[in-house]
Length: 261
Image 1 (cartoon, rainbow, N blue to C red):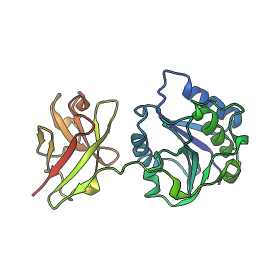
Image 2: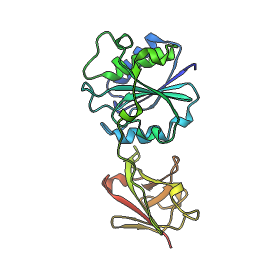
Image 3: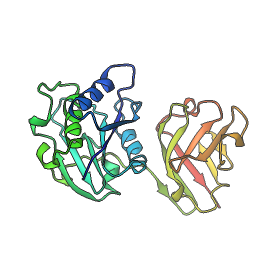
Image 4: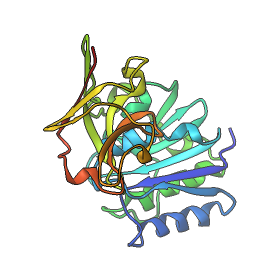
């Protein structure tokens, strides 16, 4: 397959040089590949959030895309660097659970441990594998190097798993959790639209001491400063304060309950 696009996702932010250096490495190897930033604002060290974002984003990219995903609290340790090949994409990431949610929904062709030093930087930093391992390997893969050349076969049973998203279904309610909050302070929960009954607009929603009597369509359904629930663009239940920050009201470990008759 011809891989013409590389997508980057990290927790590096944009204030420092890290993302720019990764792009420079890729450009030196293959100046013809398109490089797209998915996000560099994953909460630092939050592997689970990165996996959730990736699960809900990869489908918007064309066949032949390489995803380089670096949220790597254990960088420089014995954890493996891996590449998962599916029918349409390549996913490069540390073996720390970041790719968990992809395993549940994509057909895996093969998994490679990136251990051929020929496709690493000449000197690999103990603290920056994003530049010296993943960007190098991704650059060469986009140039047509076969996946088998960058490393050795890796058994799927050795791929580390993140904790599953908590969604508990009962006869008349669903209980979920907060996954993360976006830059607007809107809270993204683990409850998908498919977890709800067809007529879900009039559900009662309980979050700590707060109760909401319906699921809105959009922010303008309530007054400025009011709390609301809605189904977000990723099809998950979200909680927001119109033109405010719902994340200031709740801790990450807060549970979300939706109840219906």
